[in-house]
Length: 339
Image 1 (cartoon, helix red, strand yellow):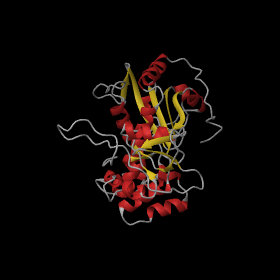
Image 2 (cartoon, one colour; image 1 turned 120 degrees about the horizontal axis):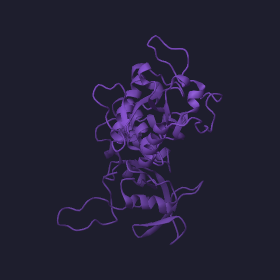
Image 3 (cartoon, one colour; image 1 turned 90 degrees about the vertical axis):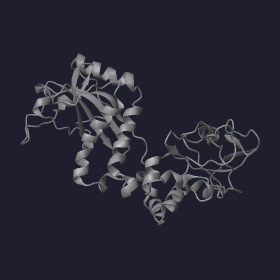
Image 4 (tube, one colour; image 1 turned 60 degrees about the vertical axis):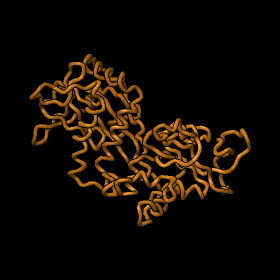
């Protein structure tokens, strides 16, 4: 980011624009904390990486044409997610969306502030987006492209960019907000090498959960390491999956799709995985009703402290399998076969 053009805390737009404010209001009403938009950006990165089939997880691993395609995918994915806000424009219209009756074009730039604006967008509103997966941050705002807010220079297609004053008129829905984690990007070189060393997908997934503890790990990370269709099966406590292998070493692996597992994470005082995520935490026996402890299999357990080694295998997580028809309600102890 250029700190001269883009201060760390953006100012409030000085120009009044009712349409811009109404479009912002629509998105804020639908997504007040930005969580839905953040998930769309995360999914768009993962869609391009296609880690399940390619093993890729970094922006610099993409081809130039794939990077160029990010903006198109983001426009489509935002439309799908925010169908409560975004209407398709009239047939033959040049812009991407209609929001509360206002025409809006979606623009993404790989460089902050580098949105390219064609002549047909001037006079209309822009939904401008930027993200940096390596930094784990993203921004989304609304601005009107006007002649007063544009740079004088244009390229061969007649496209230009917002001027410095134009960038000041962006009403930010989210500014440098946190992206859902791309865990592999944040690892040091040696840890990443240990995780990628096993030849099998099962080995890579297991090593990931052994090396990276108490951090939320998403499905796409599991898919990137497993590189197979049934990648979530690598987690199962079925004798061969990561939960079985690592339980012997004192690890619990709660999954965010199940409240019983999320409750275990909360009671242990670690990050709580969201739906589609898992988390690895190493535990050891605890005293009854000890702080930040959980009761499993009739005993109390807590996370290990620095320098400690588990004295025995971890317990099984609550069973979250649906009961067979006619059997009754599910039990809350035993093995779990899914994430």
